[in-house]
Length: 374
Image (cartoon, rainbow, N blue to C red; front, side, top):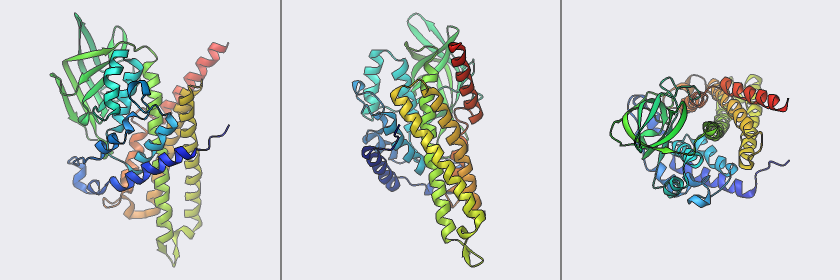
């Protein structure tokens, strides 16, 4: 089995890297006041939409590019490498919820707008405590006549502040369902939360009899299907971010001189960086395998996604920690970007549950397979 990237994949990755290296500006985030006052977003997200990135994984039947998940991680990885502040994660999440749970009419109405860059989305799944896999989802849907309303609270909604519509997972009929609401709907209140990663906005949303439209095709497997793809996105961000943190550490180790020699000449530094490099390679391989498995819809796709996110998010934490150790005291000053990668690593490892929780999900999948085989 050959997982070597094709020339098309490499060209897509390189074009995304060239674009983002020119367009992403982290300087506004390298000031103490950025922790208190949100940085004003520029036109980066709109430019990404104009490139068609929001529609990469949307089927051609709904106006998207119809590319596979390997293509997607080529782009997503570069957004993680540059910490690009954008609405891509939220829009991908919302689009997948519509693709999986929406009616044909809903998909034909909404997904072409996403692909054309005319509609930004967010997905609200976490309860007020941040749990995305609990029995209660923090919001409840009720039906009156032919209309639905939502009440309750959702938390840690990624990039909700820039979304036009929000897809909400809510308790309904003794289970869970997915609903679409307008971000400006009456009764909806949004509050931006303090979040360790200041390059990514998250919000708390409260619903007070908010008018909603149900996505009627949702079932008990819907959230797992969506979550697998979000695992892939976070894992791709993390693997590429870990690579960038290593590159920065290696470059600094070559130029920083101590006792008459570059610090990279000392074994303690070399061994640390070599260990990180090996772990990063494994993280990248895990992401690429998961992308292939999800593209091919293989039986182990869910396992591959959970493994990729669990391993890559942990490796990102390791890589950024070692990065700051190599840089020493300056590595965690506001003027250096190291701390931004460090904070993204830790939030990526918590946003959809911890690596331990993903390994528990993997064990549950394996146990269920054994029961079915017995």
